[in-house]
Length: 90
Image 1 (cartoon, helix red, strand yellow):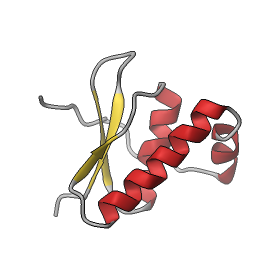
Image 2 (cartoon, rainbow, N blue to C red):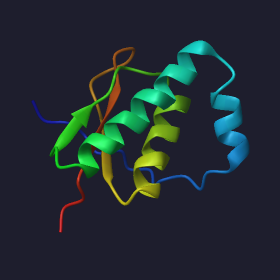
Image 3 (cartoon, rainbow, N blue to C red):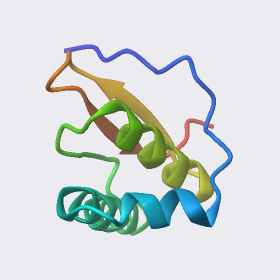
Image 4 (cartoon, rainbow, N blue to C red):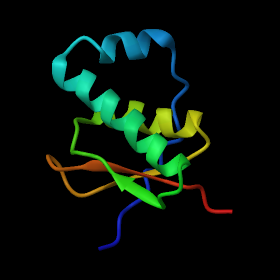
């Protein structure tokens, strides 16, 4: 399957964005999942697909990937749209 790269650029994230993300249990789990995926890609995996999330959470996941100099793309259709974190293409 092909996945469509989001045409949005990575948002500039503030600490308050992550505080808001941490408010709900599901969002907290999404943040943990993203951090684990980033570690896996940094450690050598080519790509890691995350669980589906609402648009606001996906936007933050893209931002976290960008902060770690990694690429990301959204794939799938709502309500199952999800982020894939990968190494940046050189």
